[in-house]
Image 1 (cartoon, one colour):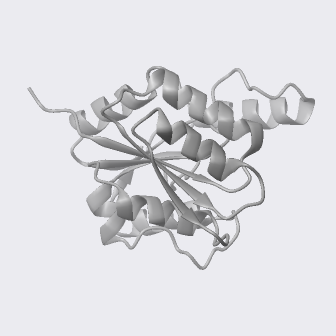
Image 2 (image 1 turned 120 degrees about the horizontal axis):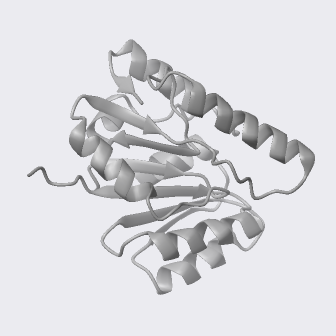
Image 3 (image 1 turned 180 degrees about the horizontal axis):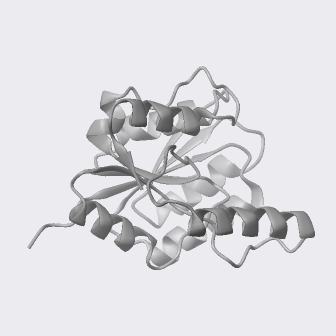
Length: 198
């Protein structure tokens, strides 16, 4: 029987607000205590650092903090450098997890040793009630659910990657100082290097 790979959840946050609290609530509810959780607070002017530190007091989470924002690519890389898991699972601060999220990641990577990375999909029940959010989230869900399973890019909001491959490729490109295409660019490098993304 193959052993499940270990997972490190990395959550970059900059002024995360109420969405960040929801993210951490889902981690508390659905993530087992043996899963490493790293929160990388990327500067900010709200209470995200305090929220992260309070969460860490009652969990096994590590909190890393940079006083000046350097961008999500830098925050994700900071978390990745501190991680010890076989799989790095990047989760944006406005994403919530389900009960089956981490177990699915572990079983897919266990069963697919050829797989370098795995990206998630929005579900079919968006949290925001306004029309634009409903439309965009449901369209994104439909695209991922009906598209080809062999992806050509990576998604940093909900994406898992084998740690040794991530480090070998140099992580996210930190020249992207604002939320942009740093995850897409990593996906392009993965594909150019011959790796598979599901």
